[in-house]
Length: 198
Image (tube, rainbow, N blue to C red; front, side, top):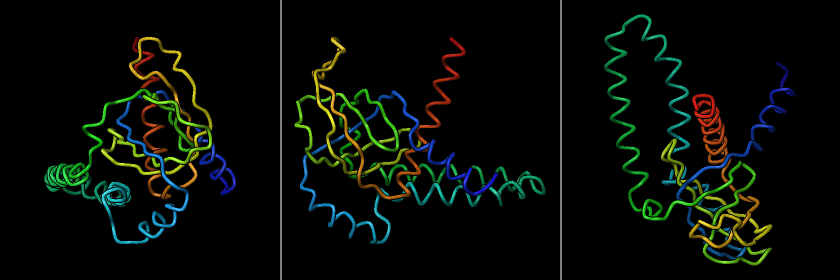
């Protein structure tokens, strides 16, 4: 597959959209706060980029692990246990200090380009929001900024959230965007399997 075709596939993957239920926190911010966000992204690892870094390391280590598994299954079994330990510690670090676990889960329509979520208030179109998402598939906290593109009454009468707000992402770390894409694809495949089973 050519580089052009690969980039086209990647671009299509960015716009896969799924319906999901996740913990989401939002707040209104001034666009000037993006400067502060950009400066923070150049610092050494913070909790929001730790998950992305771990994901990259997992991909790199998988190639080596496959070779070890073929030549020495006992060592491979031990490494699996150690990997699970590291993942548990990483999840604890990622969740420590975040209030997203305590946030009420909301129904969302999610893609790498934006999110529509159930909301307790009507937010004016054009408002600028900071969005924090807790992705349970990787226990990663994704931080993004974006513009409200619509806000209207929630058609789901049974929902405790009276409004639906749509946000187009404008600022997000590339590593976090890749994690978000993986989450969307993973959930989409899971939903397809569940649909077939039912």
